[in-house]
Length: 253
Image (tube, rainbow, N blue to C red; front, side, top):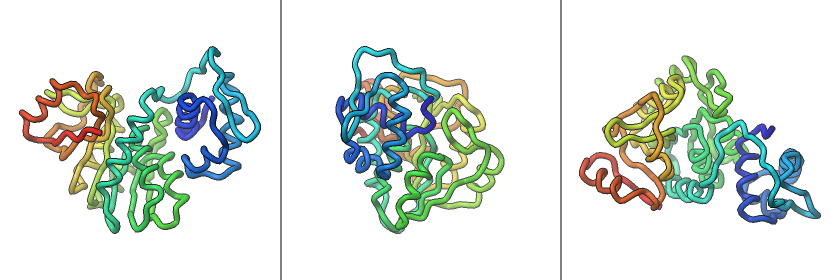
């Protein structure tokens, strides 16, 4: 079983590239040679990858492994979202970063920056960002939600309530034009809602597939969102809906 979001992202990256060198993985994921090699050992256990001299190859036609996190079939789209989101942040500003695969790409884009304060409830994002000593990285504390590797609960919420930050980048399980942002875990939704309420600017980072999905818990309405950063595959009907609402801006990448 893969035990980190990084390994899941690495899996998708190798599947797309087919053949990847250790050096390429080190540069893309901002990790050491030994970290890449340990991850490749775990990936090889899936049966769909084979380590070769200096790198790894994806083996076609093998049965894949059931992953503990949601499968990420839109990695490149999320990379674009992450880069666009990170471009909004200026030196000296503070950022609240939610958990999830798209927010992790925001973290990856911020990982080479300096003089930025990032507060997150995402364990993978904090681990990635902590490798850059030019960033100030803080975690909320709280109870671990294993499915998303995030921190939730009373401790996380109370910590967040004492903050006032410049930007929040929030993920979600689904979006409804009528009701707003949805999530499948109420405690996690409360953390997201609190992040939004202590931020001057709130951005939802979500690829186009989230417009087609729903979850039982609505944690925020569109009046709490300044902009949604998504992919250019968002249906034109949704784009027209956002124009008509004249609330949240829709930024497509």
